[in-house]
Length: 491
Image 1 (cartoon, rainbow, N blue to C red):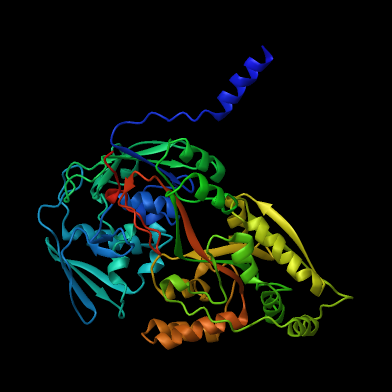
Image 2 (image 1 turned 90 degrees about the horizontal axis):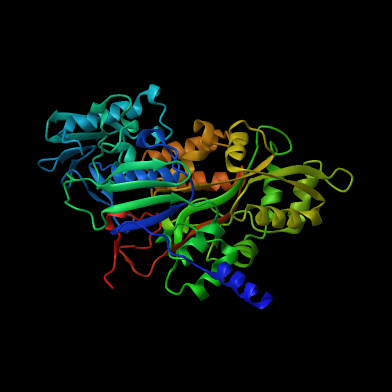
């Protein structure tokens, strides 16, 4: 009898039931819960991915991470003016016509301080968006912008249903301009998108997309193996080898346009002293962290701009134990006066492992680093309130451009400049770079490395799981995978 019960218990533990789902559905796990539905009032990756599925602009994202014409034909550009002819017979999902005025009104709303858009500064180089007639949109720039097509594919610049009034995000189905429209959303459970019946490109390859938040990365891995979901946005590095062995063909690793770093609070001692920041930065063995501790293909970062979008990754500080001790001594720290501070990091990922490794690397220099862990919302609230010594941070590209990474550290960057770095030489070089001199952007990056307001660690890689029966997925540096292009392969 005992043996029989044991067999039943083992069978229950090993069972992997496949969840029932409607035919023609692809289920995608996101990193987090969607934070909002208005593309002009969100900035987190999960919300932006869902917004891109629903809202289309003059341009849209391709499967390879680039940009292509969306609701407009290819633009005709001369100097700082680009003219976009809208495609014929465009409508929102409620049947309302999409005209040039839709885009002019949307841009005015984006730039209105009352909207409080967290991404509005991305569009500072656009002087105006005008509608000379119903079928023509004219975009005028303040300066040359090589990545304008990509910028116009951002969901904040999409055709939005502002004709529905102030409460349009509460409507079901949501009125949209892209391939899908939201029909149901249960917080903490699922968000269902169904094909937009009047989308200008016809029916998307998959009629229903279900986005679900991943409760944690290990649970996401189990759900994928059980066949409950089709794509997972991240794999725990500690389980990467296991996934490669047990999920052949499903693991997708690719260089990613993102930089992982920790921010020093330069507003107060000890990190108001650049010598201390440089010393600690020099003492970190990034190669060991990237290749041994993480080991998923991450590249050690000694520069800010990722290699995936053409960054040079210059190493200006090097690793010199004698110089590290000298800098700390000059700043007043040594055996009789140890440097003490707290490393703050958020839950999830490998932040604790990296923090522990850095503390161990600093210990031989008489540095005593304590650890402070909190969940993500509290962590980033503390960064915005300047309540930290050294804190886990990083940047994922909004645009495949060096200036997108450098802008974060300008003195006028606002709340996203967690370190509080304010350096006139950096600002001057960055401004000259924005005016069109690539050498000045490189000079700004060099100045940032020398002053070390951030402690660079590595360049990200994307670590996705994609069902072997799912087609249309292309690995790319921007980690963009539009749902409209995904489909289930015929058996």
